[in-house]
Length: 346
Image (cartoon, rainbow, N blue to C red; front, top):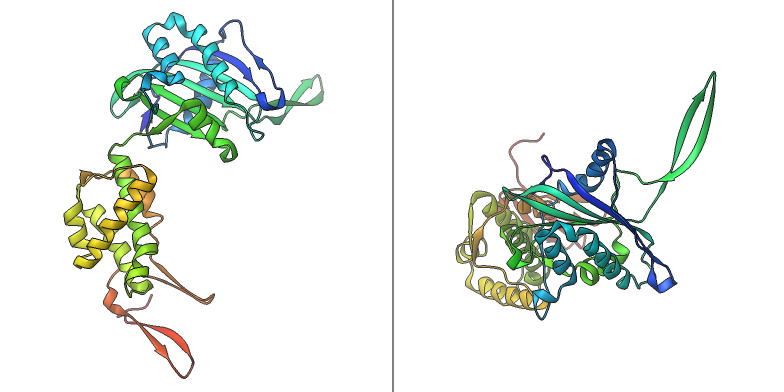
């Protein structure tokens, strides 16, 4: 997780980047901004607050060679020589403009910011922020003149709503730096993440935990019922066992997990085939062992809902002993039923 507790804005410039497809213009500033401490404090809040709860970390990459990634190169030049900040901010704005060629892309102000320091994974380093503000709001300003008041409407930016952002931390350069991202406008995500930044998720413990739980859930809910006679209660038990394993262990071990959760050799074999296919289709590799990330577990646990939905009448939430719920069929009513055994009612 990233922190800006001791951060300050060292340099900042704004360029106007409009949609190239609709004949929008690229308007480049001639100088960085010179702002007072109060405005800089507001901008620091605007730029950094959305990142405080982000756990995913990305790296710059390129299919051929990392050196061909434009944003990686421009950022590297700034990190190596702060005097190149203005020059490289122009290159960054031009690069964004060249990628603004989709009808859904909005015009906006593009901020390039140099932070003196930020903290990520317990390490502190210099950082570069790239932000685009695409939406304005109307604010009311009230003025008092003697005993009378005047109200005026004014368009501006809500400092609690950042549209797009990337913070590049000067760590792990050889891997493509550590990059944290924000993107509120899902309709044009591809141009910002792929076209402009060209990043991929860092395959750290958070990534491994997140993807491992995702593939388990898909296997249990989508693949397993195709090949084995299991009902929703069985699926719920597998989901509960998966989450319990991650809660109880500090280290994930693939073989131990499969034997603990799936147990049956034929299910383990089916899962192994599904995992290989999943990795190939998604171009990822889930390690056989890694340190479990509690942040990723909390994120995925919300999706592991062990709920049996019966028509529109009932929901059964299964948290524990699978043996206390049994499924049957009533021929007289031509309907399925569940029997639930319990000791106390609350």
